[in-house]
Image 1 (spheres, helix red, strand yellow):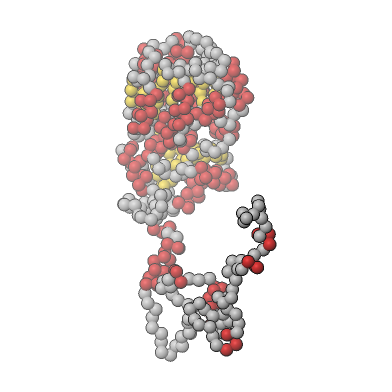
Image 2 (cartoon, rainbow, N blue to C red):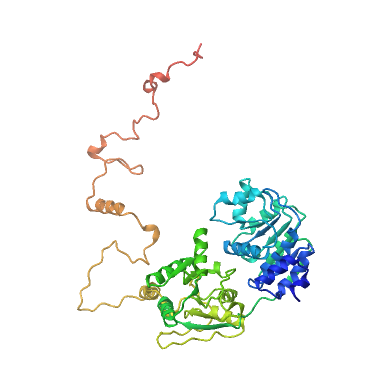
Length: 511
């Protein structure tokens, strides 16, 4: 099957040929004819299988007939990340250069004023992230009642990032009679439920996800202690004279730490993660593409949709928690038939994550051994230990001192104290001091109350007032009036009532 057999226009075929593509991928071969027919499509395909062209090429031919109106885009493409949205926009410019179609990119970190100017003039294709799209709609600068073609790309990433409520709200703003293209890497039950709500009699197309990286990628792994990873990484970069590399970390905090560490040691490095300002992210990516930045330390936000030609090295500074991410990461190198090298720095407690990767790709990652690097051994995979929290299990050699001290304290509390020697004089313990384990909680009192009781025992004084249950004492105390005898209760007799209470308020009732 070739591109002319799919029913595309001559202008699109000309752009494809100039881009260097000759044969369609499986997802393109199956999806493009149904999109041209106007049917809804539910596609399951991983990133990197040519999915963007599967919906971009037929959309260009569909939108070639018609005219855009102000503030009313004709087609809408939703992407989970800014990088993916920017890449789709670049593909539309590449494939649609022989069509007079207008396009706008709505992503965060860019001025609202510039985006509003494009929307006011009218656009054929609107590529946006859900949050920024809703911001424009709530400000009254965008209407979706004329959008007849919707593409929801990377739906599984939308679900993971919590964008599904925003996507559902956006779909409700669109006309009910429309064409919807729904793509996801995996068709999970949650994704299928969303597809049932968004699509109408769709054609389901599933392309088997890649279970192994390209054969042009040379994979290797080195096991070192977690605290030695930065030193080992710098040593490998120097020994191999690496000119450019993409380095992946699992957490954004580690991305910043590793990026600053490489800079301090003289490497031309930069960091890239989702918390950065969009303008800085785009400048960083452009600098890495034109090689003004040699080493890019990134989170998984760059694992999908990042296409950099001629990238020689990919380093996994952290073993990914999901095996599929391993394929996405090392797939950034060895593209278009070019050779690439992928090196993974594993810690001794990464055994279960490495086992999952081995099951997915169907083979073990070769272990790299170097005489100049002190390596470690992987721990045996077994049932997870209890009481370790939700994070990765720590090795036995990384237990904290507090954890080692706890059983000793319990043993010392449970064992009785050894008998004292007859020649050794033991200090007398105070009467108020009790063992912590035997002292009941309800008998604990503040210190001032204990001092008050101690002083009362030391210097007792005769009571001046008799207690209610005791008879009055004889002697001088008998003449002292008691509160019970002769005490005035309330106002007492009439002579003790205040005068203002005796005044008449509205005439006397006595006659």
